[in-house]
Length: 114
Image 1 (tube, rainbow, N blue to C red):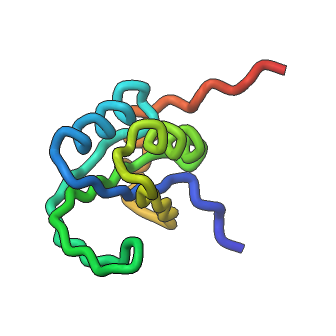
Image 2 (image 1 turned 45 degrees about the vertical axis):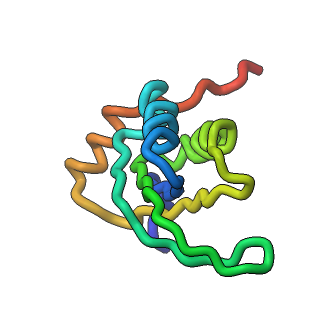
């Protein structure tokens, strides 16, 4: 049986640079993620019965899977969209040195004390 994934890529998108920076800082400052990459994209999608066409900024963050709940909460708390895209993709394998770097640069969210 293959090993369970230990790392993830979290994807979200926003419609402006200010929102992209806000989310990026909200994920990086508490060290929930090791990095966030931003790239411009063209999006076409159904929204409230009509087709929308817009330019967006896609954010992709790398993190330990243990941080996924805290990452989702952080994005939802500040995302400007009514229904934000928050998709988590497991990293099944990768450069061991890069995966170690993710561990070295992130902190696990605080666990409640029993």
